[in-house]
Amino acid sequence: MLKRHSVLIGISASLLLLSIAMMVYPGGSVLDKNSVGFDLTKNFISNLFGAKALNGSDNPARFWADAGMIFLAVSFAMFFMRFSEKIPQKSAANVIKYAGAGGMIFTFLIVTPLHDIMVTIASTLFLLSIFYITVFVLKSKLHFFKILCVIGMLNFYFTLYLFGFGDLVYLPTMQKVTYFSMIILVLLLDYFTTKQDFAK
Image 1 (cartoon, rainbow, N blue to C red):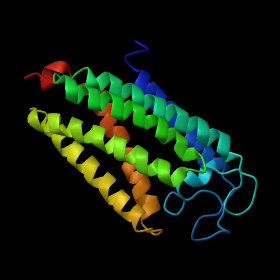
Image 2: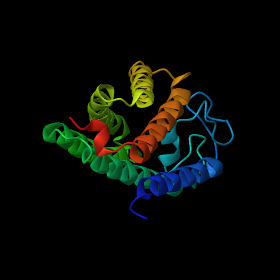
Image 3: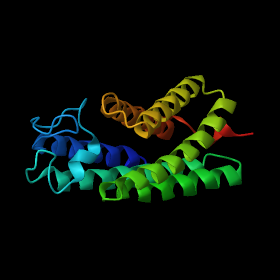
């Protein structure tokens, strides 16, 4: 039972810890150093990871956020490993397993000062795995999941586009939209797909 729900439990723990981090974040955003607290539309999740908040105060959110990212990375790694077992083509299954799970190491390292390069590496490996999953979903009869996969990837690509151009207005909001769309996609794929869905 615990193994069956491990991805859900891990993601739930991650969201709880990140929510606590947001509640205790002192304040400051890239656009307004004097803002109070954490604003979902103005702050980046990475703002939670610094020893100091952007307003210069000590940041008690840091440890909650770091723990939240550990749970998120481990949960997604478990998903990719488990989902790869549903794919009949071994080479594709290995890409999903190793690129997806391996990429989660870089996802956790986003909390370090190497944030920008880790985002690039983690995003590349994550999108590669999701692309492979999307290909197999598109070949299946899982019509609802076809829509979810395409929407999830479009959200992710648009967010990376904003990140690449340094957009500080819409990027914080799109970051959260992408996080939640991927979490929903992962949980639904984990619970509601089987090997038979992808059988040749």
